[in-house]
Length: 90
Image (cartoon, rainbow, N blue to C red; front, side):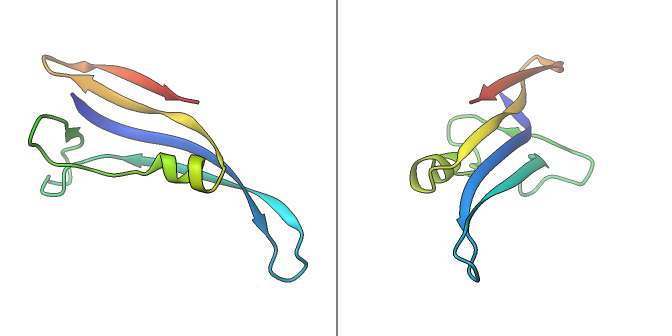
């Protein structure tokens, strides 16, 4: 499997330092994923046993910050590089 892109919408609550009011903060993450040693024109992070690792700690937002996280990860499977699949996060 090769991870291609990650798209996340994070909705969190934050307290204004001046007024103390709680406000909703919306953060968008939209980034291509690639291996550390890849060239500029190569994209994708190949996932295989013993291969490189890439962290994006979605559970940090959900469990520790109680944020609402939605989005998806785009990926391809070996042998079908032109067929992009989607894993939805809700």
